[in-house]
Image (cartoon, rainbow, N blue to C red; front, side, top):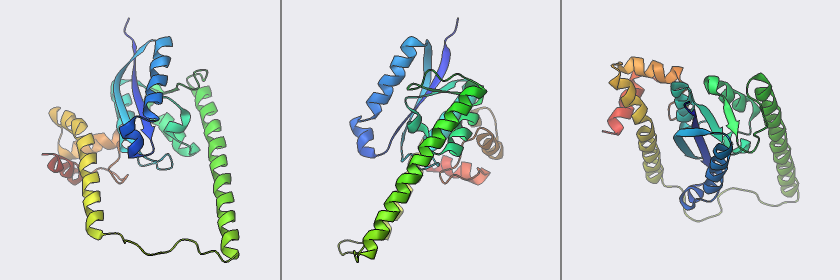
Length: 227
């Protein structure tokens, strides 16, 4: 009897955490512990270095696409590693396909419609907490400003260098192209044209680096960047 395939997704907020393993190791251990009690095998793994507030996550997009292509279940160590926005979380749960999502910190959540409902409600609570924290922070800043305290603005020191910023954007584009290239090569190996590859990527829920729709030119740019 074949084991259930899983796609693991890990997220850390900073590059320092990614390099040191802080947070990442704990997530990996949680997944290992879950699979020791619920037999299955991880067929692919994706690591994202990004804030949980951002919805444009290329590694998550790849993980969701892999789930659909392989008929696998997405496995995440903790709910907050995936998303705190209720609407975004529900779109992810729906985007995994029939396999659904497993949260190691909440193994009691059942699959199917009931599980989706429970996850969405918990994400809504998390979103409310984040909103309340934001509101309190804004109120505190407004009170400080009313007392005459200077907030923000340029206070001396080095200013942003446009050349360095352009180089950083170029490095990010190269990194994104390198991540997506294996999937593009696989589709090209199936004999698909650039336009067909773009359509397939869109159908599988894979977004461009800027979160937009794929075009033949976008696919060509990815291939040229990684040649």
